[in-house]
Image (tube, rainbow, N blue to C red):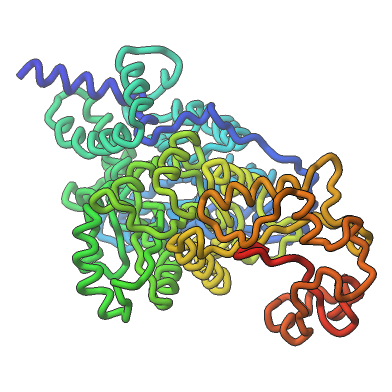
Length: 628
């Protein structure tokens, strides 16, 4: 018995490395600020919602440079205080999917029978760039009872959070920081439980955890998530305050990962009962966390919103029940693998996922939608995109918008590359807008937030991702994710094109090679400085022929290739018939190019003055087998 208790106490000690639950080592990639001179936003004025204090007037450009969202939309004020003790929470999150769930949770408490009421205000991390909002953040924290933070990974904004929390930490009834930068997580305070020494000292347990994480991060992460579920059940039987408070933190973490309004309502009631002076909450009002598995295959039409543990179980339901009802032929349909973020499923903020699933299935495709409770998706990819060692996905879309391993915090590109190389299928990383609402993105001349470019375009490309298509945005008032219908159609189209291409043999694939020609119409075809253009193309075609591509009648060398393409080594266009592979009429061009009218502002109406005979657009080049 004593040995068992000793083991449990040892497990409690592991909480000093709680960030290992999500494989996060933010010091590996701390996001620094971008230049504030990229563009100057125009400010309009909003007023804070009425509170007991005089409202503070703040700019609607609440994110400083890139977002107009305001904490006003995330503020809940109780209206009926009769016989109730009020407590106040302030939360800061990277993404907005928790906003709706937290608002519903607070409304449920305020309209409920318990003798407590909650005032709440939330801040998106990016909003703290705005000086006026930052001042309001300071004021809100100054009279708060509980602070909650999650995924605070932008360095200069993490510093702002630390600046405000540090002088208020001892006064606050509880501070809960879920995976974030170490300096922020060190501010955790749940009764006697803290993480004050996080990352500052070495321990046998800490070194062991790092070693196991390095050996197999995905399996280690899954083990830690299981530990998170198991430990609270054991800790409640230990008498010490340390164990009780550690259990409160881990239960809060479970509720947070659960994400639903019901889970968050129970979390807030538990914290009020245990740590807010004067709060009277009955134990019966606090439900156990309702959680879906830490990983699995999800589908919005699955019975009871169930999650499948294996690809075989999923396909048993999907192909025999769902496909016939959806009009999908499971024997001939291509399969698109989708990688989802669990928090969007938990918080019921999955509308953008459902839109893409519906679009793909409406076009006759099958889908396999996987998720993970952590940020290492390499394990679920290898587990669910295979059946009996055979790859089931014909193309894959990562809808989280982040790197395959590590997400926004700490990337392991070699591990991601290994998993994707083994999969050997086209891999698209689509982009949900995180720091902007879709209205802001559409109005912006800059486009994507620069940090989002780094996190959701540049880093996934290192993994091997292609075609970063924006497909969803954040609705400004509620924070909920909304699909952008035309972008969803585009993303579905590209995924299906890649899926169909992946099923073809090399001999069936058609390849287009674009040859440098600038300035156009000036005899500069293939004359890039210090580059042997046609020599490079010849080398590529030679390798393609070895791999089974149809290259037609191969030229004997690079010079012959150049003559076949140009018919004139000087590339002088002296006749409209020279090197013409195809004549495209203006009507065909306008039908194939949806942006034809937009191009006229700078290029004039078709057929223009370049690459034309005055009537048609001329396509120059040479067909060699399936190579153009």
